[in-house]
Image (cartoon, rainbow, N blue to C red; front, side, top):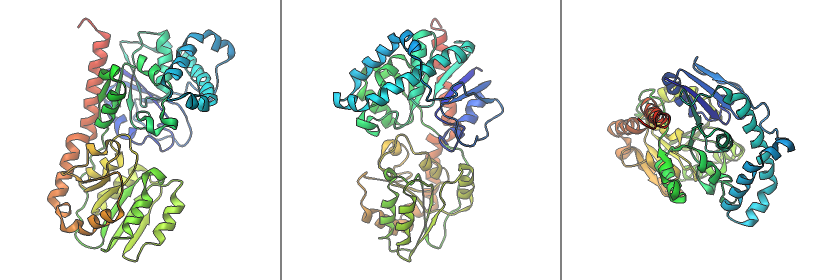
Length: 414
């Protein structure tokens, strides 16, 4: 049993990084103590297990290093600048982002100094495991600290924006080569993500490991027997989630449908307006932002025929999709990111990423008369989810790998 230092973006503040709510209990069960270091501390604090502690050494994440500190750190600044020059897709992209990147370098320098002076006084390479939940700014900061403390090992996860260049401005992840020089291992949450990193960075092929996320088992959901076809979706209401495309598909459905959506966002007004124009055979229930605990309770009591997810851009295996599958709900999903890791013949239908509204409508019209409308199929969905995405199994496998890796790094002669 060791101590784990977990670096997050905001968790447990606010409502983001909800997937950590499934992982943290396993981490706390396997480590004597888990110290959480959020980058930002805004919003209400969610409850954490008794042996988890929240620390905020970086009081202002936007604070910048002084010129004197920057001069003392000129060697690492030069390395960061060289990484930007080598990694940038074009001089135009570097020039366009330079004002922001220059400010970001001074912010990262400040965070690295605070970590070095405050946090790492307690660091014991034998007893502390360091884990960044994203391969983003915390990894850059930890990389800067590791240049001063070479014995400090750390690893990270990679999900979506921190993995795929296309999800970033100018299709570019600044400081990526600097991060890869220093991080000890990167756990990708989907097979497609692992393949992408291995293809883009073949010289670091062995650095990238696969470790999927998982969701808790709340039991099977009730089987729909009669009434309207109940279609459920769950996502932020933002353009890339393509909920407006689902509305268009529902406008073409001939059967009687009840559509329930969980999640809010900047497109909420547009979605509500579009949904208000759906034909009378489609009833609409938009729940907005909903705490995950309430959503799970809802699934346990509400019969759902199918979960539809048409997102154009996913990183890993969308947690909302995993959660629906855990209740045995058949899936209809667009082929994006790591969604294909869970959507296949045993669990539902994987659509092309180029959405055809008529195709979605046709599938929904015939769903109850096909194999996805049977109890046997729903049982198979749960079995497939349990094999690859059940939280206790997935996260305990992850911790086993991490502890084995940490032991071998700490005892190279063994």
